[in-house]
Image (cartoon, rainbow, N blue to C red; front, side):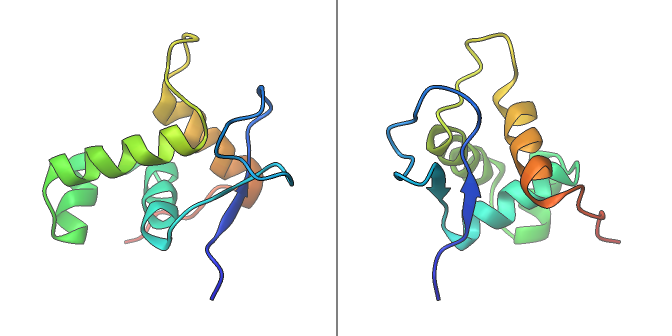
Length: 96
């Protein structure tokens, strides 16, 4: 099955973006992005996935890099990644 694709942000072309303006994420990266958009903290995500917080932080960094987000423009990379997800898929309901 193909990897999920999400539209790249309205920024200069990211080196990881395809010609179609999308970024290809692994299933794990896409799931993390969904959970971030749902408002889960790194601690909550780590607990739910049964991994360390450090593993979640590293995975989140890989998602931010995929979208060429670094927070240097005054916008949190986490907030911008959430905005990208919501623009593409809408606001996800938070799991119970």
